[in-house]
Image 1: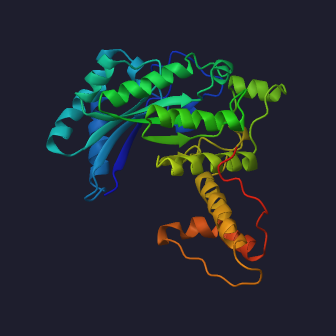
Image 2: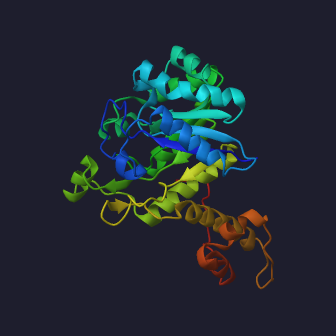
Image 3: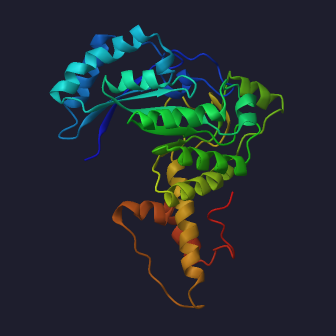
Length: 322
């Protein structure tokens, strides 16, 4: 049964750096203030009453959870211990940076009911990380993934294709490296340029060109296919649709409210074309898929079916190439 995630956004809290692309308050629509004990318990209770039989998970998104003072971390986690013991919630998830994880931290968090740690890896290329102002290295991310795995927790890697100095090949290599290190799932967030960030200044000065929507879809299609081959879930593609992300706040980049569906549809379109191209000319065919995949296979507005049926398949397909 799929879990229901009760989200708490602590945007920028604990962050030791301001990366060139980052404005978490805009992304999350949250001021980033730490929730009080009352806030925590009240929100969990509200979500529990509408979740039915589905288990609840509490998640702290944004910020750098493990860079907060330990006393502050405890203040956020302690009110949830009674709910864990009673079964009202099943697990806790946090997000943090790759250079803010060690064995002691993982052991402490595991003892307080944390089962999943998401790392803002962004890239596994040191040049890209440096140009993006991340303040850590690819080796830090590799070590953090292994540390979390060794501690018995699930680790997820957040990747951001299209950062300054990035290429399709580097993005694919970054994905392959986090999978090899032991990431249990990934999120893929193609870069968008948010007003007021350093990346916005570079974009407006002509110093940075972000991925277009089409470029981002084509690259994410490759990353999704690589993840499928490795049996690694991609739990999200693109930023969450939110009132804070609009024409006033997003200047450029790979942005679409249904980006994940666009990417999945392109991948399925390629696969359909591969199958169709193996058929004799003029042969009719039917397409069947799992009911949950109908919209992805058909494409937005059934465009993929129209393209396949109209003979628009490309002569060559590179499903696992950048």
